[in-house]
Amino acid sequence: MARLRIVGTLLVLLALAACSAKFHAANVAGAPAAKLDPAKPVLVAVPADGGYGDKITVGSGYMTAERTHRAFARYAKDVRLADANLRERDALLDAARRQGAGYLAIPTIMVWEPRFTPFTGRRSHVTVQLAVIDVATGQDISTVVLDGYSRKVTLARTRPQGLLPHMIGNHLAVLYGAKPVDEDEETEPETESPQDMAPPASAATTSPKN
Image 1 (spheres, helix red, strand yellow):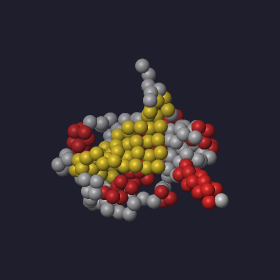
Image 2 (spheres, helix red, strand yellow):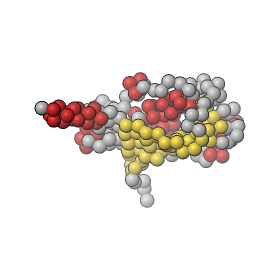
Image 3 (spheres, one colour):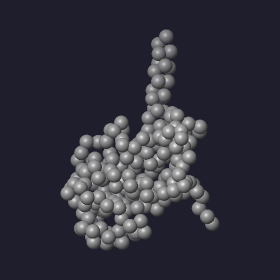
Image 4 (cartoon, helix red, strand yellow):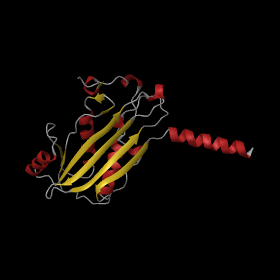
């Protein structure tokens, strides 16, 4: 009987783990506990579209920039998106100085892997590196790699962009000395309803042309 209880408990724990998203953050450079000033404006760069293998999701760069913008806007009074054509660090710093920004945020998509989780049982996966730079000095305040996997048990397709608010929001909460973002408080659901399962043309996944 005791063995059956143990087995039953393990099965419940495994089911709960499958129903939860997974998140991880790794510090790359700068101080992980650095404090940002909410009064300083922020300029957010638009990264190149990301993907996995030879599949690129068109529009994922803008989606990442927009979620990063939204996460900063919880704390900073003035947050702007940079020109999408600006990708080099020096050019972005010049733009940030011209606009009077105090911080430059540069997200970089390392993995963007959408999956039809209900049918495959495979989690959607996204990895983003986020650098926050002091515009005045040009030095990195914080650079982290943020990693997220969707829940495995769901009735709807999962999306990488649905993981970003929690991933980026929790990191910025640390930098601004605020309360961590609770997963239940996300403003954007991680999953899509069945009628939204087909990706829009602006966010289609394609293979790069030779």
